[in-house]
Image (cartoon, rainbow, N blue to C red; front, top):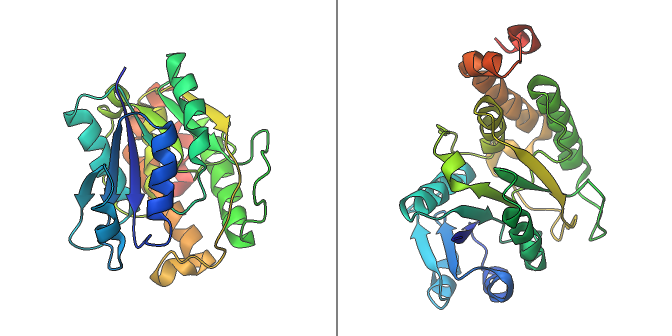
Length: 249
């Protein structure tokens, strides 16, 4: 069983060294960092770490970093890929929980949830982020017949063979919208496991207009609706009728 640990980063000079030091205590041997065009000291700090690095010459977005990680895992013939963030909101000590879930060989996607069997961390997320997460998670559940509690957590494990069935092209923060639709359309087996709810920096920016909660919600919904329509035939085969998402046209 070969497992890749992949971490997208962008301007994480304050956290990257400490996070990677802690990750190596718990992670498999193979660690990949996707540097999405950092303009601070992140590239220099990464050069001191015994990890593989993909570097974007300019910022291309969270989704693009994830797609690059998936491609690396596929080309490298890994069996699983675990993804996590580098802003100290994902606890590296939870990596063994994902490895244990992988060992059961019963699922294709193991998704961290900050809201199932709530584990105390810093449990004061920004109200707009929590509200949008709750809203989009409910809409995904309604459209896709899921029972998710946390649609946006980036702490996940993916079976690499299952990722080969997906056709992802969303570069930005709406990447999870496209992923969940395609995961259901392709019949992937999904499980949530609890992770800590940690928010260390309530002022972190999405960048540009996405810092406005109304704009951000509309952006997520737009990508979700587009993907529901694009995958309508596969979703119908999965038992989800057109009437459940026709309002997205």
